[in-house]
Image (cartoon, rainbow, N blue to C red; front, side, top):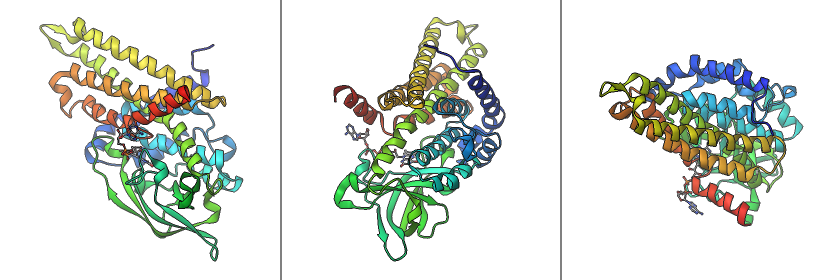
Length: 379
Ligand SMILES: Cc1cc2nc3c(=O)[nH]c(=O)nc-3n(C[C@H](O)[C@H](O)[C@H](O)COP(=O)(O)OP(=O)(O)OC[C@H]3O[C@@H](n4cnc5c(N)ncnc54)[C@H](O)[C@@H]3O)c2cc1C
């Protein structure tokens, strides 16, 4: 048993940490205030190979696997949770193509994704959130043209208008329920596909969350991902893997908040002493740091199991449930330790507190994670 990063992982962590310090931290506050999508940062991430992590070198990627993906999302999330969300969703798409795609789909899409074409994942609908299998978007095959015709509306889709290609989950046979669901690759600019409402959110302002509208949107049959009727399994597999990404995002937010708090406790004095000298606050820090470390190792265990072909679903759900709870608790204590200043937008912990909440909701709520965990335990 070895609890340590490899040399290559340490180098990757150092490189992404420096990148986040230089390119992400200085603009995180502005992106949040202006609700500005981090497209330029994403392009810069592509230049140094971050967007290609998890994509094999033979398909134009940077190689690496789930642990490397966890490292990059964590480091970016420490400075900007919204940028980390975009990156986490982006890294999920190639995994679906790698696992379920044809060789032609891999050759076409993976080099694009590694090069910085942005990816998305569209599953959620107004009446199909946790109960994703009850989705209503349909994809009807047109024999004459050899295309699938999509109709319906997706909501809460990350990156929406900026996304270059996404996996869309739709029903090809509504009579079969979740067994009649299929997955498709949709490219930006496809006629019949448009952006609806842009959401105004509590946090991760810069990530752009939108409604997608499909009106007789035609997708060539070559863009069916996997087999017809197997789309629900593809969606569940993407969510299983994505949970490690969101857990990593949550951990990054918590670590970022802890770092800001430690700095502040040495700077701020009350009663003639730095905050760091008050035992009541020292104990908060001990609590925060312990939770952060425990979250880290559960995430890496899930990532390790996934990358070594183990049965990781239960651990991914545990890692996400735990890390998102930790992110909420640690950011709340961070605000508390900053006192009134922590409530002001001048300090990053205010943004981190708002950003942390989403990690308990998307990629499956905490309640859904507990369903997954308890099913794995109780059968
Ligand atoms: C900012 C943001 C970005 C998102 N990005 C994407 C994206 O890119 N792509 C995408 O497809 N989706 C995305 N989503 C959707 C997200 O995954 C869903 O919001 C989430 O799965 C919850 O679904 P819901 O909102 O419909 O809540 P509901 O399913 O209506 O849940 C409401 C409450 O009921 C609880 N609940 C539901 N069922 C059960 C049960 N069986 N037992 C106990 N409690 C239950 C839930 O835990 C929750 O507390 C995003 C959402 C947000 C807010």
